[in-house]
Length: 271
Image 1 (cartoon, rainbow, N blue to C red):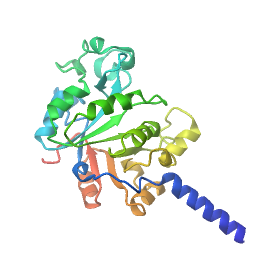
Image 2 (tube, one colour):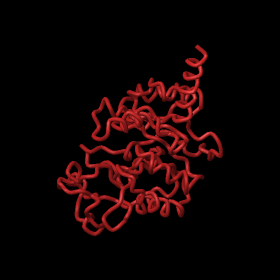
Image 3 (cartoon, rainbow, N blue to C red):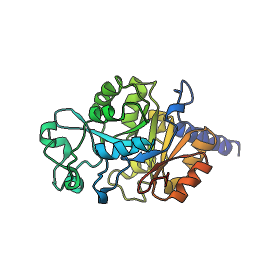
């Protein structure tokens, strides 16, 4: 009986160690604790595409934080774009990473006048007026986007944090930019039938890779708010929770009542 109890204790302690967020040397997060317009305050149907300078301008005017996505072009430039392929937003079946910045400049977002902006262009537009939540895109162990993004953000005077589904990208920031708040994005990758190794997806879905990145906050799919790992991180470790993607004002209000922050789209919380 004592052996069984000891095994249970070891398993519980091991589990807690795996999902534990950063507990020491935490950065001051007060200037990033707000709600974020998902890919800017956009309306794809009304000529204001997601992740466009127009969407970011409207978010600034509404005094909303901005969530945006970054990835690298073929020549190593950091651009703001969500999909790995241009088909949905630009009508061309081509991978963004296969194009140089000059080649990418030829494409427009959803047949509007707006192109794919660089991170430098977005920073110049926002100019520190609202905080930024920068999602690092990457499906492998290649951390090139981290160093390129960090080099640009180092010279920025505004408030920002980084997040990613990929704990290896967050681990780069853990090692190289400890003063930058970092967040682990999570959803149920198994239930969503996300491509990839089933064990990896199980581990990511249960936040068992937190030991790699020791995140300062968790950005949680709204459907996963009741997951055990999320409850432990928020309830026991006191981890800040950002909820995505919030598409209804009523859910936005519930998050505020619960002390969580929203990454929202499809409505203006001020209306």
